[in-house]
Image 1 (cartoon, rainbow, N blue to C red):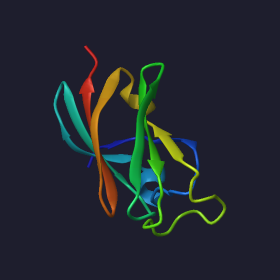
Image 2 (tube, helix red, strand yellow):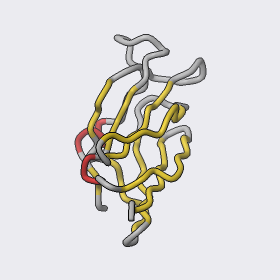
Image 3 (cartoon, rainbow, N blue to C red):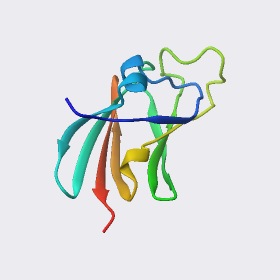
Length: 111
């Protein structure tokens, strides 16, 4: 399965899975203008706190809350984890969905 590299810009309480760190986010569906990727998390029941971008590179901020399991012990529960996708420059995040085990991200190409 195709993957997209993930860059951890800021490590907070939510933790990505080892496979997401090593291999990246899994490409679920793709076309020339729409891309859906799945980011696996070790922390369960995370939330997407913000959709962001810098210099055309899309990213998200992942939050933990009182229901989140398996967070980083070296960070406060309120510390965000920020990740970006440098290989997807000039793509925009259209929507995200956080579930127990993963975060699904739908992107559209910036025309």
